[in-house]
Image (cartoon, rainbow, N blue to C red; front, side):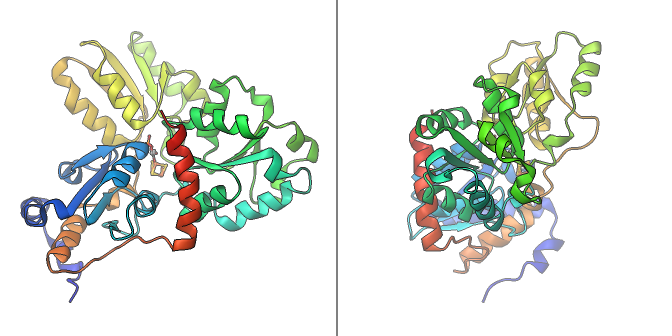
Length: 363
Ligand code: 13P
Ligand code: SF4
C-alpha cells in the first residue's frame, strides 16, 4: 500500500537528509535524481545531475535509470517522460510544482491564435510556432504538428535562426521577454515585434500589425524575473561602479540591455566561475541560485549580489522539499510509484518531434 505524505510533513530536514541518503543507496542505479539550479540546497545536495533546462533534458534522454526523479517543475518532468524510454518512469516529488509562466499559454488559446492569424495570412506557410520549454506538453505537440520547435534559454537564438530559415515569421510563446531579448540580439528591431494579447480578439492587433511583424510575442512572463528593474542596476553601480551585471533572458528588455551578459542559469554559473578573483557580480535570476553562487565563490574573493532588494524566489520550485523527496524514495523502496508524470502517447509523439528539432539545432 502507498505510504501517505502526511507523516513525512512532520519530519525535520535533518532526519529527511539521512533517510534520503539511505534510500538512494538501496535504490542504487535504478534511480537518477535530476535537479534544476533553482532548487533549495536541502534538495540540491542529493542530485546526481544538476543543470539548466537544456542540460537536464539531455540528461533525462541519456539516463538508463528506471526512475527519473525530477526536482524541478512540472514541464521538466513532462519533458523527461517524453524523451526517456517507455519503460522509464518520470516522477515529480510534488505535483503542485508548476510554472506560473507556463500556465499563461494553453492549447485552447494558442489554437485560437492560429485560427485568427489564418484570417490575415497562411500561418502554416509563413509562421513558425516556437514554444519555450516552459510550457505544457500539448503546446510542444502543437509545435511538432505545425512545423514548429521548442527552445530553451540556452538555444533560443539557434532556434530562431532555424525558424527564419523555414518561414518568415515566428509566433513565440509563452515568454515575451525571452522572445524579445533573443530577437533583438539578432538584429530584429522592436518595431517588428508585436505582443499577442490572448484575452483580446486577434490578439489586440490589426491585420497590418500582424503582416508587418517579424515576431509575434505571447503576453506571458515569469513573475520572478519580472521583478528585476533597470533602476536596481543603476543604484548598485553608483555604489560599486566596477560591477559586472549578468541576467537571465526572462528578465525585462531594459534589464537585459543594461546587463553585460545575458544567458541561461548554466551560462550564469559558468561565467561567474571563470571570472577573475576579486570580481563583483550583480545577478538577475532566482534567489536560491544566486545565494548558492554567493556561498560557492566567496572563498575565491568573488562578490555575488542579488539584483532585487526584495525576495524573488520561484515559489513553485520551492514546493519540492526534502519531505516530498523522501516520501517518493521510500515509496519506491516499498514498490510503489507515486507522483508519476506521464504524457499521453499521441501528445508525446508530436511533442517529441518539436523537441528533436530543438536538440538538433542546439549548440
Ligand atoms: P534555464 O533553462 O536557464 O535553467 O531556465 C529555466 C527557468 O525556468 C528559468 O526561470
Ligand atoms: Fe517558471 Fe519563473 Fe519559476 Fe522559471 S522561475 S520555473 S519561469 S515561474
